[in-house]
Every structure is written in C-alpha cells, then in structure tokens.
Image 1 (cartoon, rainbow over the protein chains, first blue to last red):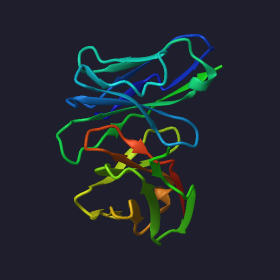
Image 2 (cartoon, rainbow over the protein chains, first blue to last red):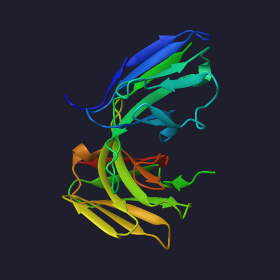
Image 3 (cartoon, rainbow over the protein chains, first blue to last red):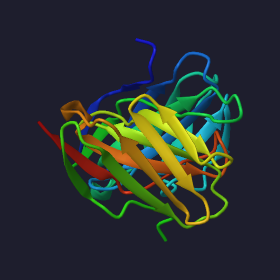
Image 4 (cartoon, each protein chain N blue to C red):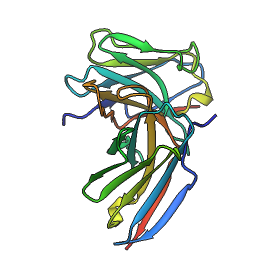
Length: 115
Length: 112
C-alpha cells in the first residue's frame, strides 16, 4: 500500500494528557498537510510543510498544538494538555507539489477521544 | 465566516439517475476546486478537480462544472450507483498546493 498512513488509528486519552500522532506521506510527496474534522463538519486546515519547512502554522488551534517534520519525510502532530474539545478526527494529506492542478491525498485519519 | 458552503446536508437519488451536488463559495480569489468522497471511519478520497481557467472537467461518471461569475460549482454523477453513497465534500484553494477550505459536506444516498 503506497497511500498516506496514519498511526494510531484511534486514541483514547484522559484530559490533561499529551498525545502524539504520526503521518507517513506518499513516497516522494514533498508537501504534507494536517487537518482536523469534527462531527458534521468538513476538514479544517491546521498546518503544512514543504519538505522539513513548516510554511503555515497560524491556523493551529492553540499553542498546545505543534507539528514537526524533521527529516522531510514523516510528520508528527502533538497536542499537549488535551481538553475534551480536542476530540476529533485528525487527518493528514500529502501532495507532490508539481504546480498546477495539484491534488492532496488523505490518510485514514486518527480519531481522538478525550475523556 | 464560512467561505465554502454546501447548502444541502443530504440528497437521495434512485440508482441509475443523475446526482447533482452543489457548492457555493464567497472568496473570488479561490483558483482551484476539488471534490472528495468520504466513507465513515475513512479519510476523504479524491474524486475530481477543476482549475478556474476551465468551466468543466469530466472523468468517467463524474463531471464538475464551475461558474465563476456565480461562485458556484457542482458535481454531477451519472449514472448513480449504490456504492456512490457517501458524504461528498467540495474544497477550494487559492492556488494548487495551498491549504484547502472545505464545505460542510452533503450526504448522498443512492437507493437500489
């Protein structure tokens, strides 16, 4: 399977705990995106990388959220001091960044439940 | 302010008929538009896209129409099949490769 992969697929945590999600993009895709989707809504953009550079992070929901892509391959999204409102599906996407008519391909998501 | 809107939360059609899903946007700077399909517990799957220099793009049973003056796009599925039953999202970006702004989705049910 050469698609975008995300781990874990499900995460249950207690309020106040830190969680980290991993995303492995499609091989050779140099752009990687994180989105969050809550029930009944469309995905909401959080941040994205081109190779290891984080190009946009102003949409991260609070300073409890951070993302890294240290070697320009996989990425991690960390949420510190989780709150019940963080419960959502966290989606990762990648694209080859070829220029015109570019498509983002999504992974299966990580569903987070904060108790 | 919701920049991309899908005003119909659900749509039901008979197998073999046409499904038409609609999407409106407010930001005239959007340059690239995509449709995704999503099944429960899965990530969105890319269906079809269109850039603002075109008004129509076709791929098999799926056709996307773009009306820039009306800031409106639509997805036509002909003929509809039961396996098409899913939630459909339209998305827009300022340019290809930029962040996507999604609509709220339309749930399509295709009845056998």
